[in-house]
Structures are given as C-alpha cells and as structure tokens.
Image (tube, rainbow, N blue to C red):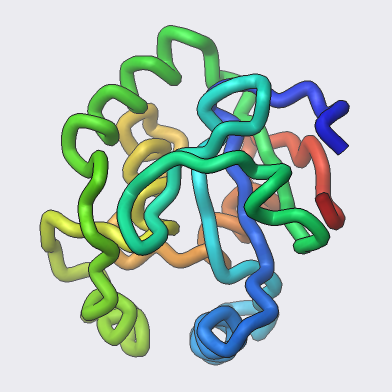
Length: 168
C-alpha cells in the first residue's frame, strides 16, 4: 500500500472501530448537518514515506501504514499545499504542540460544539490538523473542529483532492 504518492501536508482521516471512535462518530453524526459521520481521527502527513504528525496520547509522529494497517482512511491534498507553505505551517504547529499531552477534557467540549470553540492552548487531533490548515487559510477555524468537519470541508471546499480512500 506504500505505493501512494504522498506529499508533506497531505491530511489523513481514519475510522476508529473501537469504543472511543464509535462514540466520537455518534456525537459528530448528531450535530452534523448531513447526519453522517465516518471518520473519528485526523492527522498530518509530513513526508513521502507516510510519517504522520498527530495528537494521540501525546502529539507525536508515527508511520501511517503501520499504525493504521487494515483501517479505513481518507488521504486528501490541497492544491496550494506547496513545500514552503507546508514548512511554514508545520513549524508553527510543531513549536506550539510538539509532545503535548492529549487534552481528553476537550472531548467533553465537543459534546456541545459551541462550547468546543472555547479557546485553550491544547488541541485534539482534528483541531491540530485544522490549526495547521488555518495557518494557510485552508480551513476557516480550528477550535471545535472535528474529523467530520474536516471530511465535509475536504469533500466540498475548492482546492481539495482525495488522493485515496479505503483500507491501508
């Protein structure tokens, strides 16, 4: 599966079949305008080999193909994600959030989306991705962003291309 032509700045969404992923999807589905939610996790691809940068127990890197083997993923790319843009936004994100602990308390904020927009210095996985994109004017906000918001934006906003959707 590593035959995908990945680029730094590609975004991935994944479907977590475990209890937490199912709970996240249930909440997202409840609040979604289309009453539909597939993905419950998000991250940034930082190199051609599939190294990711994501908020897990800590904000860290791992390999997409090893960590999400046999999981449903979507990989997307924005047409304006050029190397200079990637490095600019990634350096900001890395300096602000590298090795941060996962803010589980923020998940409770997402039960009521207006509350999730309250600012804190910590970000859940989708907020990390949204903040990265927000630095480049590719996503309109980051506090309160969830994986379903990212998915809908990728599907409907101009400039996005889905590179791959399926199991890795």
